Amino acid sequence: MVQKRSRATRVAGIGAIVALILSGCSSETVRNGFLPSTPDVTNKTGDMISLWNGSWIALLAVGVLVWGLMIWALIVYRKRKGDNEMPVQLQYHVPLELMYTVIPIVLVGVLFVNSQRTIETVLELDDNPDITIDVYGKQWSWDFYYEDYDVHYSGERIMVEGKGDDFEHLPTLYLPVDENVEFRVHSRDVQHAFWIPAFLYKTDMIPGRTNVFQVTPTLEGTYAGKCAEMCGEFHSEMLFKVEVVSLAEFEDVMAGYEAEGNTGSLDDPTLNRWGNTGGDH
Ligand SMILES: [Cu+2]
Image 1 (cartoon, helix red, strand yellow):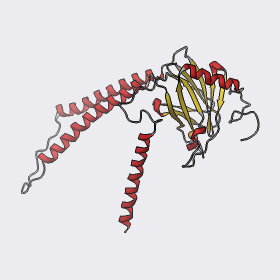
Image 2 (cartoon, helix red, strand yellow; image 1 turned 180 degrees about the vertical axis):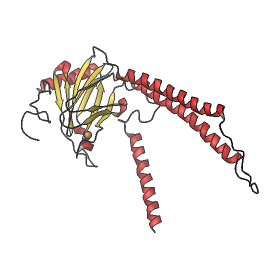
Image 3 (tube, helix red, strand yellow; image 1 turned 90 degrees about the vertical axis):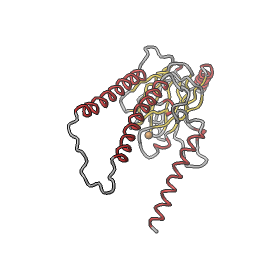
Image 4 (cartoon, protein in one colour; image 1 turned 135 degrees about the vertical axis):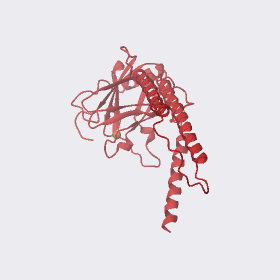
C-alpha cells in the first residue's frame, strides 16, 4: 500500500515537471530557454550561448568516451563461468597515468580560458553608453529611472495568486532596440537580484552598493524579468516585464512619463522604499 502511494506520488511529480516544461514551451516571453537554436536577444547572448554549447560538446565527448570504455570493460572482462582466476593486476602504468593527468588539465585549461574570455566580453563597459537606467529593487517591486530623459517609473507589488493573476499590471522596463544600455543596479532595503532570463545575465542588488552592467538588446519583444534573490515573504511576486521597442516608441514612453509628471531622480534618500515621500504603504 505504502509502495503504491509512493509510486503515485512519483508519477504525479513527473507529471508536474512535464507540465512545467510544456508550459515553458508555450510562453512567448520565454526565449533562450532551449539552447542553442534561439536568436540573439542581446549583443552578448551569442558569446554566452557559444560558451555553453562548446562546453557541452567537449564534456559530452569526454562522457561518451568514458561511458564507452566502462561498458566495454564490463562486457569484455566480465567474470565467466568456471573462471576463478585473479585477472592480471596492472600497476604504475606511466603512459596511462600521464594521459589521465594531462588530458583533464588541458580540458580544464581550455574551459577556463574560454570562460574568462566570455566573462570579459559580457562585463565590458563602454565609456559612453547610449542610455543609462538606474534600477532599484525594493520589497517587492521595482523602480526605474531613465537618466537621459530625467523620468522615472515606480512599480508596485503585484499579486500572483495562481489564477487570473495580475500580470497586466506588471512593472514595465522599456528598452530601445540596438542601443547600448547601462544599468546601475541598487537596492532600497534588502538584497535582491535583477534578472532578465532571456538576456542570460543577472546582477545582485546590494544595499549601499551600485553594480553596473551594459547590454544592447537586439531583438524587439516582451521578456520576463524577476528578482533572483530570496528577499522576503513576497519575493515570488517581485516580477517585471521588459519591453524592447524601437527608439521612437521608447521616446514616446519617456515623453508619456514626463507628461504624467514622473520626472526627477528616485535617488532621494528621503524617499521611502515605494519611491514616495513620507507615508507608509
Ligand atoms: Cu526577491
